[in-house]
Image (cartoon, rainbow, N blue to C red):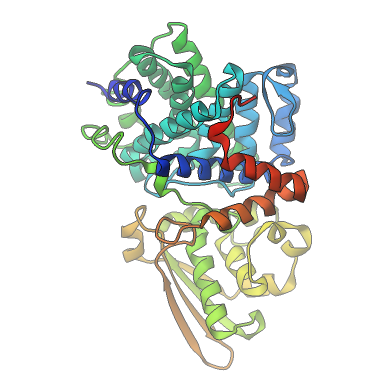
Length: 441
């Protein structure tokens, strides 16, 4: 059987498989985090421009944008998926080097609203999308991630699987939905090696593309079932010819959605171990930015390649600047939304400290990537003291997860300014009970 057919066989069995309380709970955590990521992204420049570009698909249809505006399912998936990735605070599955929520949940929500599905059906679609796509991401590995933005590529499969599950596709149609998704999948790393608006559009486009692939398969459109594992397929063309033989070994047994990383800072997740390590040294030794003579950050290669801006001038560049976020953490004690406001970007203490930060690849830590995201921090003070700390994981990783209350606090912090504090509190309460909802509309 080809990989697409293995996933389709699982999807057919999954339709009647009871979900444990643990899996349902983790699915709700993923949805809450998705909304926490969505709201601060709504006013991002590419999201507003995308709404303008898709105006013909708005104010009619059965799906909804985050603020309640009606939309066709494909437009809702595209816009909500883009918004959920725009603020750089969405979830990730570490081993796949991939943000699964942005596209998967956007497609699942749009499809569920279009069909008037229940909350339980919506959650089942979300789980299926996560389980299929994260496995594809793991198989594709670092060779794929070197050039491709997995959130845009692998995210297409998450969206297709979620939508396909909700649409009730049979085995054949589900396999063809994934096959068509592979030819839709795109998103280049180079798109965010310069300051641009393209990166969040990768997630939105993946949500739309996967949803459309599922809709096409429902209408009999076929794809090449060997498109993942064939000689000129996705794996060989966009990876390194990976081994697909064990792709279904743990499907339905080991649920990846229970091991997500939820961001505890705002920005590129590759910088978070360094931020956590710097904050730990600051806490332990009462360090102030003015007291620091030098900072040395050693971590894994992709953190330097992607968080590459040495002297960021925009908020977007700052989110991808390892030196900026570490300096911000040491100077101000956190890296949240305020870190990217104009006055903070120009902050003299932060800019001065950035010039005293050096970054390098640690071969040992690089060898452990992607299964471990670690950083080693050395700080020397002006009075001659030297402090060193190895941060083995990031706060929010499965080893140091955000608790339910911490996740809810994150939601209230990020959604509150958009919805209002009272409405945000009411909304998150509804999300914790979403499986009981009769209608996702």
